[in-house]
Amino acid sequence: MSVFQKLGIQKIFFNQKDKRLASNIKLIVGRKPLNLPLYRLALTPAGLGDQNAEGVAISNERLEFLGDAVLGSIVADYLYIKYPYRNEGFLTETRAKIVNRETLHQVGLKIGLRNIFSEELEGRSIVQGKSLYGDMLEALIGAIYLDRGYSFCKSYILERLLIHIDVEEAIRTTVNYKSKIIEWSQKEGKTVEFKLLNVSGNQRFKEFTVSLEIDQEEISQGKGPNKKKAEQDACENGCKVLDIEL
Amino acid sequence: MSVFQKLGIQKIFFNQKDKRLASNIKLIVGRKPLNLPLYRLALTPAGLGDQNAEGVAISNERLEFLGDAVLGSIVADYLYIKYPYRNEGFLTETRAKIVNRETLHQVGLKIGLRNIFSEELEGRSIVQGKSLYGDMLEALIGAIYLDRGYSFCKSYILERLLIHIDVEEAIRTTVNYKSKIIEWSQKEGKTVEFKLLNVSGNQRFKEFTVSLEIDQEEISQGKGPNKKKAEQDACENGCKVLDIEL
Image (cartoon, rainbow over all chains, first blue to last red; front, side):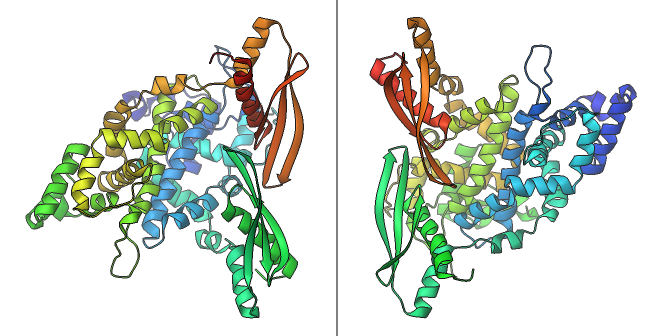
């Protein structure tokens, strides 16, 4: 960070548009931007089609890559500390539920990315992808990381983003279909068996097909890249067939 | 971090074993550990089978989860800065090549994890997985992150781990089979065509089968979870059939 930026002298050269963006960023991030172009880049989705002088497309995709990684690390840290007695499988699964595109898209909308982006668009139009604001939020995290460092970025994510996500609720909504089937069968006094029906594919890409049998009767089938996932899939189908409450 | 740890007073209570581990860690990490038990945990693979007082298995798997995330973020940062003109696809691919288990395992061996681990084992034996030291290195990164913070962890990774990895070489070894096929065909004056033969699977798990046709003659087939990957697979097979130099 240059002395120039630290003293905030760059503001002198801000035009009207820069000033508006800087104050919007301050509202969303909580601090004024030191490196304003980074934030502008974060608000530039690939579809906008601008190019730099060398003809390279300018978009937030590189920042999105960075922000995604930083977010993954910070959420990992958060979950590691929050759940000292849960194993790494739980941590991995919970993180995937928190940082998926759909959730981030919703958080992006909540913190007001739509408004600040529409001002940036200045009348241009763009094909809105399903996770436009999720991608943009990741890019924004990348920009904040580069602009203010990891530690500020961590406080930002914990204090301003995670509060929009109901982590406990996300954890509860995991449905383990297999345990549902086993639970139900034990209550009904029936036996549960999985049979491997088929394995197809090459060494890099396999598909397992298994059947779920209850009291020796085939209830459903499932497919997946490994036996465990195929069984889960079969049990999900089985829950529907048997009308088991989830 | 407690004042206690900052002053290094904990050393007074170190037994012989603790002292040995602390000096080993100092050799590998470059600074003495503030929180020694963290590092001991990092050196405890799942197979060792110790349990804590509550009967929960003690292993480095949680630290591995954390270290993996932190490493991903730091390498993302490194590549983002190092390659300002490469797109996010290149960055993602390059990172995957750098932080895969096999590479980390080799780096773990190079920095001497085998020696320090065998001292920790104290004669106990363990079934050595293929990436024992890769997993351990990730766990060590997690421990360093918790013990010394992100910024120290970043210097550690850049100065003491990445120097063991030939990033340029890793990038070069990506073989884009499809471009090899297209290049070859242009030189030979032949046409290249891909035909989608089959799509199987359910909505969560698809398998595409495509054929590679050169001058209307089928050369090879390929499979993959999407068309692009299936084409790459077909081209990899095609390169073998046509004996194209890679």
